[in-house]
Length: 210
Image (tube, rainbow, N blue to C red; front, top):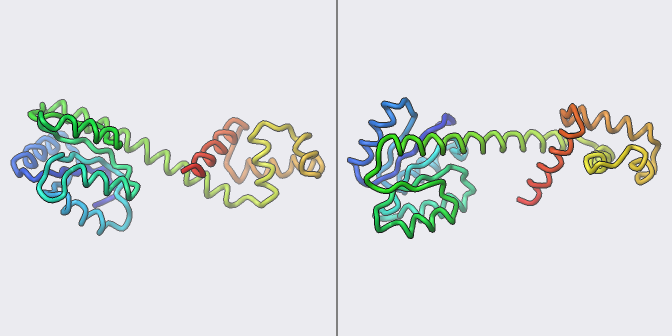
């Protein structure tokens, strides 16, 4: 597995795998094929880091580990790979349950090539957006870690909308000192405006909730 966006096709039916592979080849989409969920997990475990770039096209019914069981394992590991389940007519209740557990979409057999491609493209777009959000959150957290304890106090209050005057009173320091700390906070956080600083605080609070 690589860092490039890759569609991971997991199906015990070789004909289905080959058909999807030909479709993705024609569309110029990077992909890998696996005959079982355990084969995919072996590659997943061997990767240096979680393969968050891409999506899964996953058969919901397979011998051994089912698609739903693989989904559970990936959820436990915090995977953000969107999953598109391939389902038969009788699998619809299971597919609905998979959606409740966080699956991106499901597609019924037999499916049209363009229908599958459209859903794969949407899943890859979702994944790219998730990756961008994660990277941004990591940058904000790393910047926050460079703040001194006093700068963090100023950051929290300024990002909550408090004026320098009231921050100074609350912290027992001069307004000029608050201005100096505020300038340092803006510089270290890479924020050009107060609105950006507020968004950074909201993002950090979201990380704490996670």
